Length: 478
Image 1 (cartoon, one colour):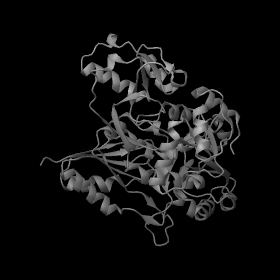
Image 2 (tube, rainbow, N blue to C red):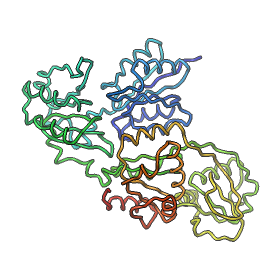
Image 3 (spheres, one colour):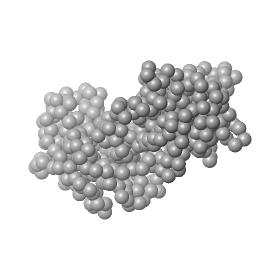
Image 4 (cartoon, rainbow, N blue to C red):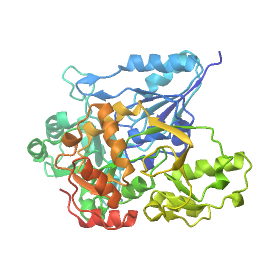
């Protein structure tokens, strides 16, 4: 058997858009991905549907897999001929133990590549409005581990050298050792008035900051119960934050949105919400299998209703494969949602909405489900869609890390599948959405939400993305 190949990839600091092109290309061809806690799980959605996902996350009090086991797994999977991606938060060469993993692969003569990523020590400060260097404030910069293998876990550093020779210092994952860090810097000559800022979950929409000085930051952290993952930044350059802070001024900053979805494809709505500063978790994650269809009678119908945007592309792809001329179809086209209507428009057809569809004439419903309450309709199921079981524990971990404050149902169809997905995760709908602002797009969504026993807070009149975003911007977070 031919040996596979391993890509040791830096996922960047959290914002999925900060991964490198080469890193994303590696994910898209992976057969196995071993991923860390700080690598944004949304990146896993770019992997092939049959990719094996293995969680290697580490917390201060527990390790899912120890480093030796991770090294062994990389070797084992590669020797089976697999394309393996080791996905790490930030940059793999900055406290990412990539040297140990590369050495293990080299020992077995397994080919590998190391793909750099944007380091959290640089990205998190920038998202907080702080460049780590500046001609007037900081000409040098250091990244420092805030814990090591010493008996008490306190970093054994050249404190005098740091104080004397470095203007800006970024300590990684050091909240627990913050008192020792501040005391050591002051004891070796750093003024107690030196600015300090902690940046938690940097570059995520849930990013939080806490600012102080070496003298008072420890007390502030204890009062705020601030915790890792966080970057501790020390230096006068922090004073620039007041002038150039940008991320925290974005219109949806602070919104942690849970978005129900019915599609397995990348959500355009989620993308727009993130571009406005929101943190977005999408659920459920779907796997799709294209099914063979019989199109021999398709030209005989008076009306054709498409249940989803995907059903539009699947239908036309099948028409092309069967070499059926679209001009033979006499039917009027309808979409079950604005997305479906827009998908038809992209194909050159002006379609009506299902709510406005006349009842006369023969009807064909094209799609992957039978949610429409219609009489005497034939159904053309173009694909089989099922929950991706691998993503259920991933979703649970994402919920543990986040503090969801907004729930968005973009369509009526999304309500039932969302609730069903939660059941498979063992999550109670009402516990999850307690004190969460529930927003529906359109009247059909509102009806389905109320039928499920939920109360919705404010309903945009229009079902467009723009209306939803405007509503979220204007409406305060609950």
